Image (cartoon, rainbow, N blue to C red; front, side):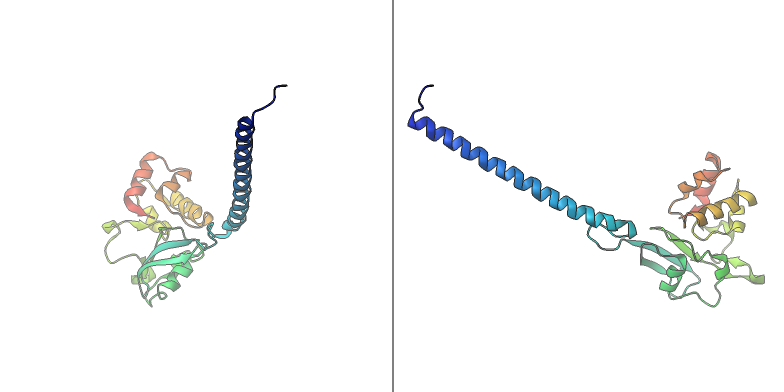
Amino acid sequence: MPELSRSQVVVYGAIAVALLLVGARAIRAEDGAEQSFAAGSAAASSSGDGFSLSGQASDLVVDVAGAVQRPGVYRLPAGSRVEDAVKRAGGATAEAELEALNRAARLADGQQVVVPERGPGGVAVVGTGGEEDGPISLGTATVEQLDTIDGIGPVTAEDIVDFRDLHGGLASVDQLDQVSGIGPATMESLRARLQP
């Protein structure tokens, strides 16, 4: 085996040191990635209860309108119910028809909660105009209100309310395409007359 010159030994030694440094750096980076992944996994495991990776609760933003003391847009904790939104808006007014609301329904981000007013004969009235004046809130629509929409009969209206209650509220009108009896034409009518 040929003998190495002094300059060759220095070059090979420098290469060996460089490879050791690169290897050590790679091992440290891998350990750091595993530690941050483990920390991220631990934080993510708590996210099932409405927590983000940072550990802070994720919030919902809802619009509360109608017969409440302070109508407006409010931020509420994830998992909040319609009852919580009404309380956050200062509670219902004396004219409110709370029986027309499913106060136990779970809120969805971006949802509007409209608390109807009691009209003549104890009938719930949403707004001051007629039914055609504006869209109906999907989060609070009654069977009677849904029945006024073209293509929706009392059975389908009841199915929509049951579907909404089963799923703890709805964030989008598009979710109603999962209800049996609602086809593309009915979905267009719903989009025109309902809002989240």
